[in-house]
Image 1 (cartoon, rainbow, N blue to C red):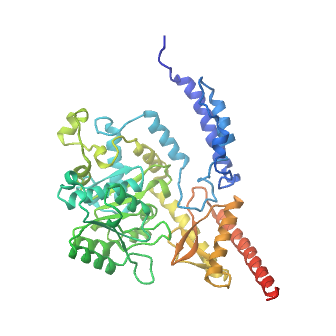
Image 2: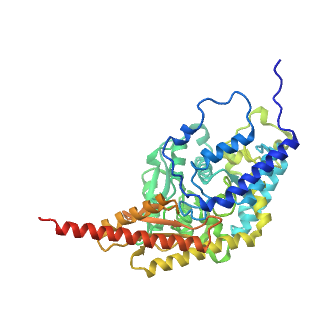
Length: 499
């Protein structure tokens, strides 16, 4: 007769848990000695794993051996101190402890009634962080707004768009859906999550309007935004949402939030600020001007899981109207009804997101804030900004490189200079990046600015220190010199060939 499969008893869990913690500690202690980027070929990981799943239980030690043999070589190491690609994913060991607490509780916090602590800790945390970032009381629950922890900025953008659609149609959108006249305004630098949100919401690609930048800038032009909005309204279209970005992914561009909000307000459009990477820098008073005008917007999003020492996932979304998201997203079947919800005295966070279920993410972030304090979080951000500023000075001083744009906080965008023109510089920049990445010593990514290939150096990994940035610069200089020498040799060979 079949019986229930027993879980680990507490003592066995304790023993195995120590083994796992030791593994993680050893991995983090030695991650700097690993190649940053995985060197395996496509399909290698699959080929190393058994095709048939185990029929019988296997010991945890076998699993860890498999992780060492297959998973570690097949992993790009985001916690490596020489990870300079994309934006950071600060999975501090402190946040892992908070995540363990959260997972250990096993909470499903969809409703207040399913876990009052999950809901109310999140409210307190988001209200406190709103004040620490300078968002103002209108984004707190006491001020009529409030915040929630989403899984990603992409989900936050989709939730904001759905709330904007609901508001713009006086609720009719929930019944009738899109009518083809909706328009959403972004720039070419805006994160692709906004385009995806438009697609998921069923608005179609034509709903997305690309607003030109100001001359000589990559930031949104208020004049171009005004012209686009006015033209669409005149054509019988409906402006739904404007998304200024604070710290674009490609170059760290800062859109003028205040001016964009002023223009959008004239046409009744929702303003959602995507500050996924850069927004947390506003914890530092000297960077607070990044959020100039945020008091005028409808929603604001920044990620704790990028630059704020918190393991993925933890994206912070605030709205100035606490009723906006539930109005657009709430659906209450009978099995979710309960006295607390019916009283209207509690927040049910399932109405603040697309999915129903939600993890106790607040406990992970609370652990980070508790352990580092706001002062520690500010020091973390300031150190990386200082490292980036020093790195940018080196680029300015070396005629073999040029800044593609001015640095933005801890992001530096540069190109290799060969003296052979734009095409040669672009080819050299690409080759330098590819060789450094292939070496495993560091990881860089690229973007394109005005049609030119640009190397991105995003400083922000939790273990990154001055010596790692110094080593990257030395490798850039050395690799670029090799590439220039190869170009010169090839040019000389061509000149020697008979015509």
